[in-house]
Length: 367
Ligand code: COA
View 1: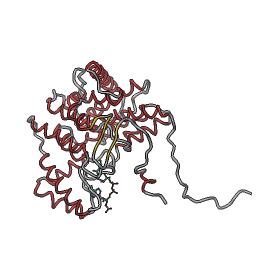
View 2: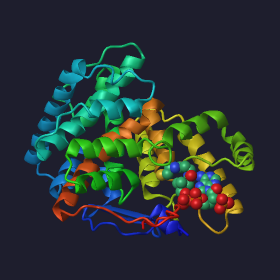
View 3: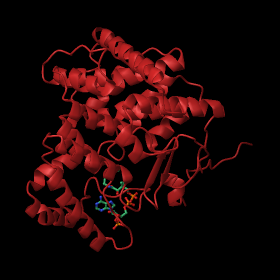
């Protein structure tokens, strides 16, 4: 019989990593030696790329060099849009992303990780604009990566407060231990395959609703609840119907996900700078009620808000449509995937676990 750990690999250590550490008991996430809260508050996406790929935060020259390389990578992805055929013509944004990224040619891994990171927001924005029957907007080399994400999506100069909030999000979700998509990228890398293939596979894993697909439904929940006074009744009826509350609970964290707190703080900062974060008050009320109701139903385990709960609040306030929530997750996590692929390559050993055969055996033996 399969044990839970055999079927879901819970707590099975499959790699040694210097990239990130998740402490589910104390609710701590360390990324390359830094608490996630510190990166969210102080770093830019460009800083976090250099940290993940080179092991230390950049000097100002290094930051500018990376910023210029990312701008070139966005420009390159934009230039190949006419050659990727119908890749972006699908109602599913993650399907579009997976297919479009598959059009990138693999070559030198150091060049490819920048190309992949630059390409994801270009493809995501072009997909969203295509759905609205609008043409893609050319990237602006002088903008930061976060600013250009918004510029390519809306075609207008982004507000600095929104750029800062998006930057905070991109720093927050860059890496998170041995999650399913990261493991996927490492398995592909371990076969000696190329970086583009590893990232396409990781996007496929992230696409699944148990991994990267929760923030859209969290926003749907906010819409369905509508007003704080209705939260308890709505949540009660969902639980009575046997449905899960999206954005609550986590496999590893037994306390509130530290990224939920970091993103809540980043959304508060956005609000203080004058940008309305319409759903923040409602979200807090729903979280309080959900936590109370889930504690009544599951006194044996603590089901608290996870990263997706406040991702929905923040990305919505920044002006990202809910259909792009998962691609925005990929826009950040690609940096972690690339770092893990590099780390796995240095291990240099094929990941090839075993299985236990439980099927029929031949009834006749050969004479
Ligand atoms: N709402 C209601 N009940 C929940 C719940 C939620 N969000 N999360 C877990 N539970 C309940 C389950 O129904 C189950 O109850 P049971 O024992 O009576 O059947 C129990 O808690 C254990 O659930 P299980 O699926 O084994 O826990 P897990 O640790 O594997 O699950 C998640 C982790 C994230 C998959 C789960 O909490 C969940 O589905 N959350 C909602 C989706 C979500 O927010 N995903 C984003 C994750 S970052």
